[in-house]
Image 1 (cartoon, one colour):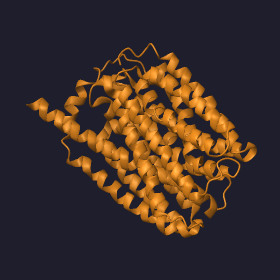
Image 2 (spheres, rainbow, N blue to C red):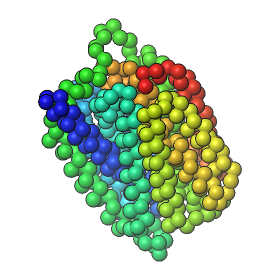
Image 3 (tube, rainbow, N blue to C red):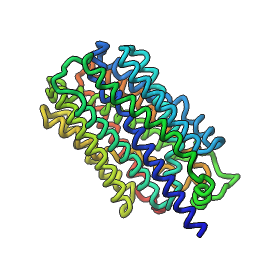
Image 4 (cartoon, one colour):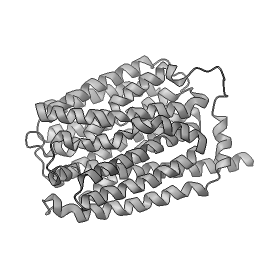
Length: 406
């Protein structure tokens, strides 16, 4: 009877975590969604536009390890609640920055949102990994991150429906943009309070059953090759992913590439997230039956083919190829993460903090890609993405036969 009650509490908490991933995923996508408008409002080049990605992702370098240590002291639940409150503040800041046409304020707000996302991943990913069967860890991680992708898709659809196609000037779109951001901030505040109403002690009982016992002689997480290589791979993967998120609409609207109007580019970006979410859901389903590293390998090869086609084709064909890349690349982060933390036991929180530092790639690589785009052209800047996906292929091959616990 006690175990049944505990399992019910775990399921309730998992759905709260899933809801947090969903709504925070929506909040995290909006500065990328409005990049063409922000570029126009402040007359930015591609490099300065990518400072938004830098501001959003630099907290992963500054805070990941600190948050990992803090999560062990104040608890994963409290860390997750704090993440939502911080995210609400960041979302309000983005809305206020656009409303007052204050670019530095938008950058600060992106930094705040990135800090919130650091808190969420450091606390949320171990919970998703531990609260349930260890064999299904990658499934839960893919599912939660798929919900975030669906939220981004819905966010894009909201933008498409709310922004009138007849409005061309970015300054005229500001009231519509803020009407989306403020309600999202309110929802995030509500989610920040929800975990306090859950029976956390019951959840901890089941979580402890899935954690390896403490070994005083266990080596440092930094000495685990799988963690360090996972960190490096995630650094580059998340960096090029942020580049696609931040430059997709510019790619679609560029006269030399997609040559689409604003409304059409928003619709295509919506489809990008539809396929991104579908890729994660299918990844979660297939990884119940196949080795995660094998699925990662096939996805990485397909993504390389897609990005090469996106570089060397023009018009709608190039845009469609970039959308297809989102489908295959969507599983990279959660699958690499789950492979890396497999078997970490009591060290999982510290491992999560280290792996989350990989998000710093989202701060550095988009800026470099933006500079490359200013120099060689936006389309050819995605050559960086091809090289990174080659690294994913290497990681998948290296651990293909070492994940027998899955």
